[in-house]
Image 1 (tube, chains in turn green, cyan):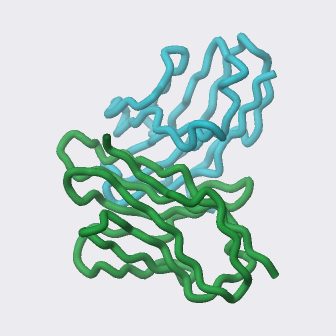
Image 2: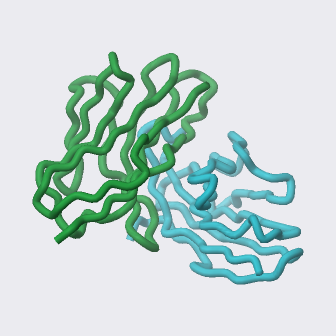
Length: 116
Length: 113
């Protein structure tokens, strides 16, 4: 079945440590790929997106993500986490087939906690 | 401020009642999307409108309906409310079909008591 999987429900990292949030998708063709962040009580903010080309994409707030076709993955990374990065992170895809209508399909999210 | 405006921010109502959630898209955006976010179901796509016409339906209950008006604002109507309808309802907008991502509003938190 078509799906977006974020295997980690909750991750805790120390401030200043590196971060990697995992995302795998299951679609026949490479979809359009996105990462969104949701701070408590807030809406979703787009961090970065991938359509084609360079498989390493840069986003806002110092985040980057790498697309790996062979692993059907689009993992989000940050070299040094700040306390303000504590939030929930959602991987999302837009299936790249004719009938998809461009609708975002979200993973279940990964909640990030940051230790001082 | 994302440019997508949702009102009200919070809504508390009783079971069996009907409510209307409102969304004004970002200036220039023709597509509006509605999503429901709950703890058990996560973010679920409900419905999409493009320039006043319904374009796609997701997991939207028959008790729910939506429309997009000529000025492009949209309303989501929820009727015969049940406790399980308590959730965050997000509106998002995009200029076209959404392949390049959406801009989300800050959501309406609905509590059914």
